[in-house]
Image (cartoon, rainbow, N blue to C red):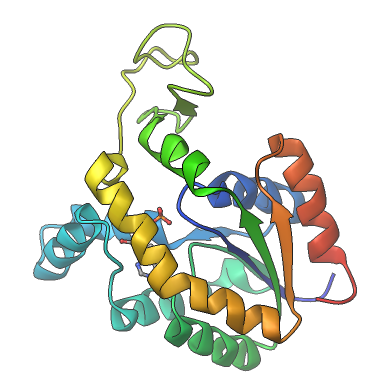
Length: 219
Ligand code: AMP
């Protein structure tokens, strides 16, 4: 396969993280989750870390300037040489333009796929999400509860909820998505490069369609 950037677009809770992880295993490309990188930055005891932390906790988007730094620094690491998977980037038109620039500088083709999930399902997925802080296993109190309430099946650690998965930030994140990221969908659809996949199917079925989209000729 030629050197590729695989972009997974979708609302918060659409399953971008899960599918990106599977794609990463399939192709051996690194999964670049801007949300994860920003959460790491937010833990640092710096002015920048504090700004990022507050913005994320409110469910708002971190500035395009900060994201530009993050994405440039990460995608120029040696492990990205053959390709990489973007999980959570781009989220605005500005970010999409920067990505086009980076792709041409790096000599890579971009492949886009959008995972579509109804708003009702998104709210439940986000508000019901719990994670194991030790092994990273993801549960959902509505759809995939652990055997014992609040405890990881795999290693017995106490499950945690992301601070932005509480009701207020969830509402804000979904609003932000509609306001800032939905125009991006129009932008990519018009160029005929966006493949849409129904995200309300079993994980393996979504993955199979994603693989076909990524390997397909007309993207
Ligand atoms: P995620 O883990 O992808 O749901 O991202 C969590 C939070 O990180 C988002 O609600 C934003 O505050 C921030 N974030 C992640 N990616 C971006 C991005 N590309 N642009 C702006 N903010 C982002």
